[in-house]
Length: 318
Length: 115
Image (cartoon, rainbow over all chains, first blue to last red; front, side):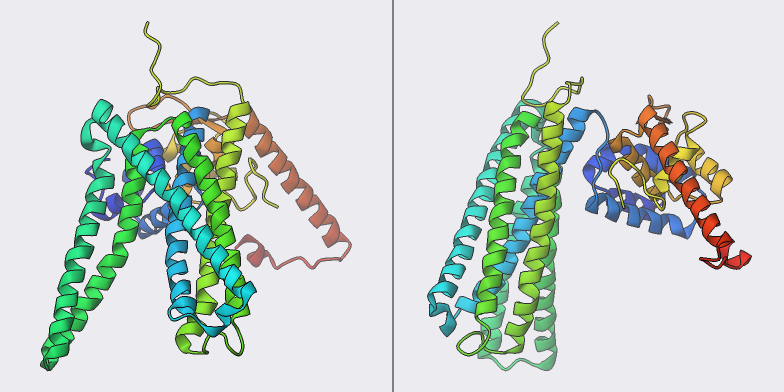
């Protein structure tokens, strides 16, 4: 990308999905350079980047398009799973910590158990896939591209985990100190600011890790053959997430009324937000799964087209 | 209704297709031609979003890169899609004209129609 571009345009171009940047980044940068400086260029680039993420399109040969589509599906289902996991944690806290009385009703209990079991299966599938691909990227990184492929996935996640451990320990220590001592006002305000900064930084870690995993998988250039098991696992995980969301909805609906959830602000807010949120992100994962399967099926039935050499396949020696 | 592989009327892709009728063009040239044809200035993000969709539908194809610019040309499928959409627009205008003649719709004031 050209350094002649203003910094804000370079940042906006960096917001595009990696596949889009790889395919159109240079041309887009050249056009932004040629375009008359207008404030709406920045807005147009920002909207274009958002649309490129929401409605991804893939260029290049049919083989490249198939591979990019499969990778996008795997990553989208991974993101959906992580958000549903967050929603499920809030849901579990709401109904099972402490267990509400209505949870003893067999049907409600069964729905809750189904949601837990489905979440476990989805988590197992995602975990298995993540470990397999991390190992695969590590192997190919050693063999073909050095550490360049592995670092984007390893550094942010390692730094993130280290941040969580260290900051959680520091916050825990500070809170214990604050409880035992009468703090002056300034110190108390400082502590609250510190807690907010910790919470914000922890939340910001999730998107950083998502993007870094996407970059690492993209750089690894995994072949269709290697991506296919991941695609099938991702679609299975997306189906599990549907079961999670449906059983969560049944549980929350059954726990309304006497003996169910106490009508506290927290419960009402969680009940009205958590399930719709989980349903929305699951829907995104399912739609992406359907697109991925369709792209794979269409490419499998289409006549073969020449494509680039993929990792996992070797060109014939001439 | 939106059909895959066929840009809708409000899709900038339709405008991009029409700029490629006379031959291959690169991004900047497409922007200039769109401005000449329709008085619309396509932003870089809008243009490349449209080009990416058109390419994934197989309606345009890219040619070898020239410096940092890559020309695009219309494919046969793209030409057919453009013709189909222009036909639909022409039918719409004809039907609208008949409805105006029969008094079923009231023509808008000139200034509002062109705004």
